Amino acid sequence: MRDFRLEDLEDLLPDTVRQIVDVIGFDATQKLVGRFGGARFPIGCGTRSAGERRLSLLREVIGDENTRLLVKHFGGEDTLVIPRCAAALREWRNRCFYAEMDNMVNSGESLRMALTLVAPKYGFANTWAWELINRRRNQTPQTQGRLF
Image (tube, rainbow, N blue to C red; front, side, top):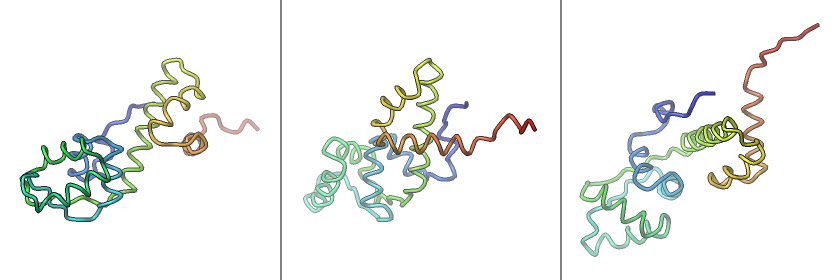
């Protein structure tokens, strides 16, 4: 199995989203896109009281620390356009999940134990994790043809 590389999804993820993920991580970015995806969101520098309402909205969704990181990284720009890219983020998340699962199994961990350890990291219930594993198995071509 090959390792996951972000470049594999370059056509699915806008540059802005990749930058946001680098700053606040996958989970917070998914929440941000889920709440504000498709919106133009002025970040500012966080120095004026007029921007406090927007910062408050961000804090509600991604927390204080992630809001601080976004302001530090994107502050001063005119407007941050938060892309609506839920399908691409799901695909990216699933590929990261597969890569981590593969690494654990290839390192000698059982599939069940790998699922127990990795699924919660991606917010998956055990049943959904197994569904993803089974989907990938069904997409993988069978190497042994019919014998008779």
